[in-house]
Length: 100
Image (cartoon, rainbow, N blue to C red; front, side, top):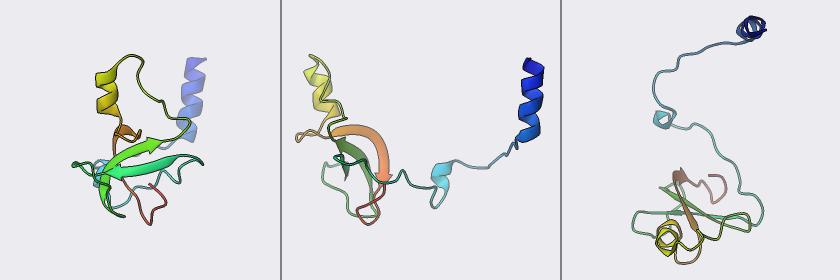
């Protein structure tokens, strides 16, 4: 069975070797628009909001985003902004205040 699956997969697949990391490309796509009722902000290292087209840390807030860690105030202080946005640790760019 394994050999049959491997053969079937190999006959329908193309293996490509790409040089370089996707982050090195000029543009490698978008994650799209946030789901309704979700607010996304990008913050600079100093905590101020990044301008359109400027990279920053992706921070999210909404009903589906956790409120915090149970009984862990130090972790909450590090993971959330003072106004409740979760700091994902991911970098992003917002173009025209729409897609990340």
